[in-house]
Image (cartoon, rainbow, N blue to C red):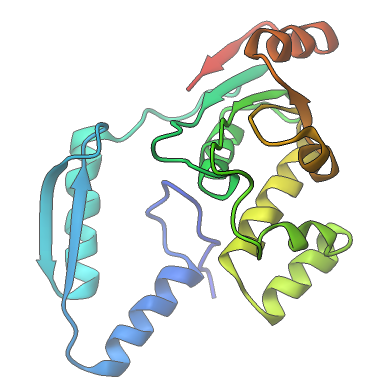
Length: 204
């Protein structure tokens, strides 16, 4: 139907946003409030009214205020996840997804994900036992769960890139996810540089 999959930071049409709009239209009278946040997490602007129109206006305001520049494919990407806003791997994985847009095919990613609260809720880790990626995706289509989607994103990116994660989460949990676990950022970067031809780097 021409609609693309949802992605963090993307305002393109997606099945997810289309489903939300369908639900809103089914109720007949709905009202939405959208907010635009500064990088510090404070409210910079707000919109309200029709679900579609309020969201579109919020996207326009956000784009004016803080839209990032278009990604440039690099040989190495280093990305951080603020522990104040990414307390576990489920929350922190959005930064990993953002980093992938800047990485050349097969390029390593160094992912700083302290995750002081651990991997996430109990429903998250079982998704890493969902079989091969096509089977995982089929399970998501049968019984969608946001934690299953986060797990799929991590597994897919770990397959496409050498993801070096620096985290407080136990290596015994991280390695089965397909991640290279490190306890120090310098060690992670040094490993990436030693095993890949790195000429350009993006730091997010």
